[in-house]
Length: 308
Image (tube, rainbow, N blue to C red):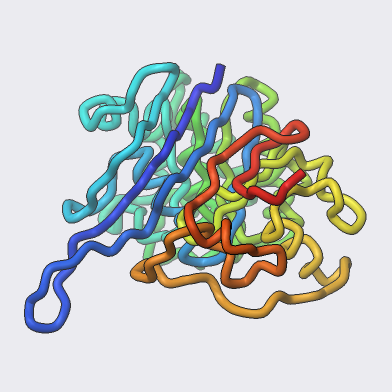
């Protein structure tokens, strides 16, 4: 059974436009995802596809003007706001995209020590994780503003690693890291999964994700369009199911390096049918009438009536 399950998630925001007219900005619709213990699911998609919003929805840290529908379950139970608050930072940990999540008034060593949950010697755990990520001992006395961008990211990864969480959500954890440290961080995620932890890796870097992930979830315009095993990302992408996933794969330089025309629709754009249909060469009138349901196909999941 999945330790974390997201079903039919939709998120919108109340906002005011010219003339103080109130309208809803819908950013996520019909988003589905499940993660099992002991696996890494990499969430791939362009900016604005809903990756970070999903992470914030799971943790219950969306702004107050957000409206959320659908269900999020952890260990089989619905994540209510009270349960999210109780689990946040303990059983569900976030490695945020922004280094602004660090406390600017607390020395970084102390911040890591306060994140230690399942070890009796927090000071030793902090020293060990600093050594692992090539952070010198004197760094623990520094404040966040004294860190370089790469050091700050290593700090965020360190805090999640010592938390003992059962689910780790890593939101773009590798930008700014040199290749050696990036490889080390990715290996740590794999080790955590092998020890039974569930890892959601949010990233733009499909190539890096394929090195450690078990499955790839592809987001487009706030919707899950495909969830595929990493083994499907080979050759010319014939094993993949959704046209957008195939386009991402063939756009890589080592493949055909072939872009597709058009852009992802903006959140305030109304689309009655498949959100990818305006850019899809397979689109028919049926695609524009209603959004396809997510369905199982060849060991994966896909949201496309043409997939076979």
